Length: 183
Image (cartoon, rainbow, N blue to C red; front, side, top):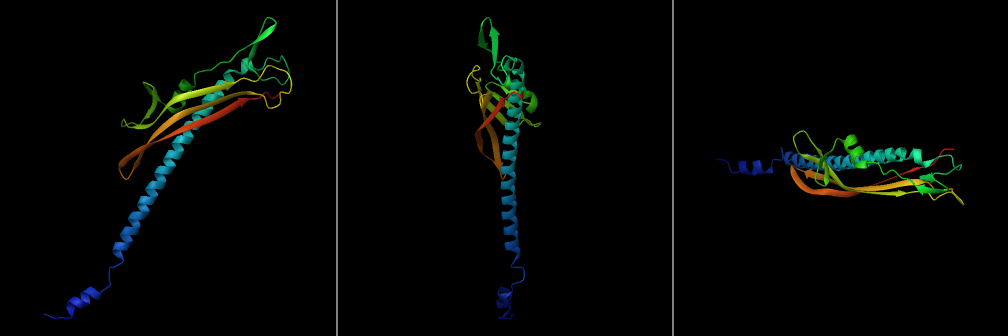
């Protein structure tokens, strides 16, 4: 048996970059997975916000018949003439129903859920808050005064990374839309 042979084997550098290449590849896969999950969360939140915006705009459109009667040019408040006075007339619509139709949601107790084909919850929404700000009855400077609906809803999206379920992302999604008469 040769004495110098084990020393040559230990001093040989062939294949020493292989573990480093594996480690770098695994790190890049983890980073890519994290970025992909982040973008998935952003896309879901954006989709819910867009659906809520669409439902709110639909509600504003439902109020169009009460918003502008030609009583006064440039007037955009939701009022109905009653005898010699005006009475506030606002249609709140049903934003949850419109969002369920747009997003394909199912209602489960207080939550509205989006469920995948294999029965997993993709996201859930709840606690819709709608604030309708009616423009003041005509008088004075009406510039900047318009019929506005501010809304917010809670969104929860399950987060998974590396095959494990992490704490869910919970955010408040806000939306605002208004009606301004064109003429």
